[in-house]
Length: 335
Image: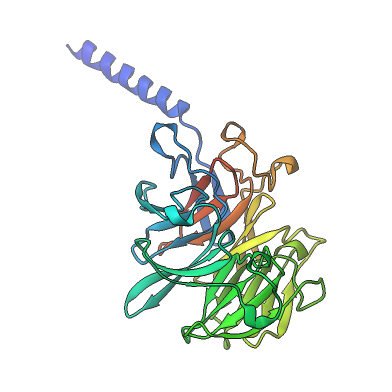
């Protein structure tokens, strides 16, 4: 009996070792004091279904539910922290929902959304009820028709107003007050400080002495910093050291800022906008910023075209790639 029992233990241990050897090694990235692990298969849909083109943003609510834009009739897909789909909505928003921002009013959260196909900014509940829509800023004198305006991002302001980036239109940023009344515009096309080429994502930085606006000035390969009157303060750009290739969106957590860089990686900056780390850099330039790269050619640990990245309350990162089949990745912060 002892011999049989010993043999069983040996066989069980050998089988366990064999299984362990078959498990791929974890993929981890170091970013300053923090370590992130690529969570394989997170957000994968059952039955081989695909998300559809993920050409939009990611936000995380107070319950750590993750909201992702797609170009399908499931314009907003909501995941729990384990990657299970909780709900979808937005059939009327199919084809062009691009920017998402959470805003809190009276203890409740709402979504401000930028839609490039409808040429509008919208406000919705977290369940998808549209509360209002805002058309193109005719008052600015910049546009003759709505089709010239393709807003990509919205940044809420502390007073209830908000800023809108016309990233795919004429490269202006427009300010509105809490009543959705047009206030002013700044930026406009160009390469000099204060001018923009595809101001793709914007975010209000409130961690300093005075709030400032951060602009992912994508085709100028930089982040620009503006005061809230629209005056340029400085730029963050270092072509010599390949700091930013094509920055799309950025979001803060604690003393860091994550930047989704369309050209194949995610960059983490500190509160002074200095480099902390670059994560998941794709070694193949031909795959970077290519919407057509198919799932068979994706590799764990490598991004294709990071379009937006955001944090949950525990400092985990969620990254969406701009790919036609749809991709979202979780980078779990390892304690």
